[in-house]
Image (cartoon, rainbow over all chains, first blue to last red; front, side, top):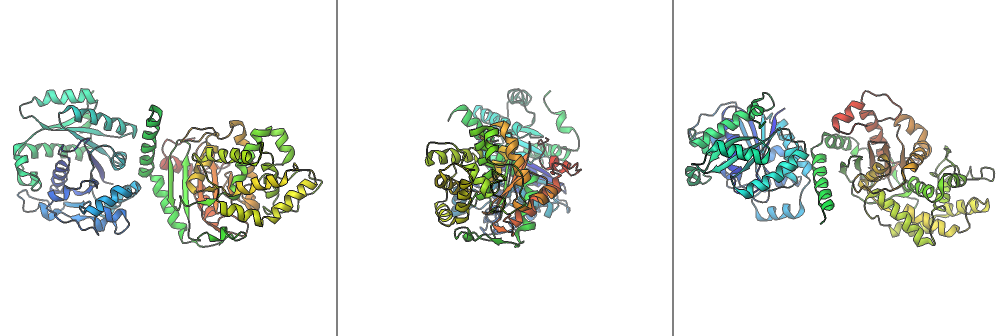
Length: 269
Length: 343
């Protein structure tokens, strides 16, 4: 049985989709079988990072929710997008993306009608089973909503991304409180877009103290990333960049999660 | 919104998520799939309104005492409560009159006869056999207090609504249909009046009884009503007391001994749970201190029990070791599927 990893942030613009794409690609390149769900049905976007411009309404997470296609039919093989980017890709790896529809009518419909969140659970477990996946990442809409909480409830590891910002800190505390009530097994924080001159160790300790949850990485705001502008999966192009190295360390943690105590070593005492 | 309202909103959201993520939901979906194509039985047609039910309607809902709710299929399709109302009204009669007076008007002995049987009603018995047969249910409705019909119905409807956790409406078409064609029930009532078993305001009591049977519910409501009984009379979500705790055992006892018409003996043997069935197609089975299972499917067998409901309840009882008198190793499955539900 694979691991479900849910990736959240309380507010938008934390770099959640970029991190999800980079983490999933890093693991797939190492030879793991990976799935990614874009449950941000209100503002989908992660497909762009995998070089997909057009999400057909007939094969999307939306279509699956309406009962118009199976979950495997909604999944796109995005492994070809990683190949040739520069980083060697293991032949045993796999990467499937279940995109959310970008059509205005589809977005309006799902926001208006809502959907049975139980189907998301079935879909995640169904895709994992169908493709024999090692990891499924769930990229969620910012804030707290049903799919956020559902993905926390079924996750092996929940990662919450925040910026070193008072609004982010306060909101993240809300998500952590709800995650605790759902008996979340393994909750980790990533501080993203930190100032490059800030003392990351001090920042880590301060966030851990304020939120009572472990910080696995503090990642600096990178001008290079800004310039790249979601033009692809960054760490596949620039594997030696600090950002890519940080993503690699988080990937190591996810591989170890549930099997070794690498994560718990980093927990605040 | 007040603090407690916000807190209960958060709990409802978390509860919905826990249910959606629960393996028990998958178990119920599989069960629904297993019996969805089973088209044994026929829709009740003794009143024209009931004959409008679709044979394919099939919903399962489960509510636990710790507030989790599950539903599969047509769990939000409305149907009339019919005989399922009887044990709940028996509870109200007990609250209004106490045990001694109530039991002087209706017994608790199974009959083995059909629900509308007239046979065992004679001068010697002095009271109808039990509150689950029509004669006993009419007598029980007669015990519901109130200055006039409206007040009596408001009390009865309010009581059912507290169990369900929402205000339940009456299906007027079914009510008028029952009232204009309920000759047998009128005959039962007048026979009982002749024997001095019920008070003289027979027509008012019959009206109350027909209204009681025409209350609209769905499987989700029914599961919540059963869960309230499983939870000592307190609705697991609203925390409202629907019945005084000391009478919960009275209600569950008559359900266990008389709840499934003239199939009750076999039901108790095979399924082993207090339950109640109605010709609207609803069945509720109560697992005391744990949960309630409600099934809605209007295809009935010749005794008036929903065929799919019998099959679903028997399967769940076996799979999870729920038979009250059993020492089943399958009970472990219950805690696997619903962690934290240990009774």
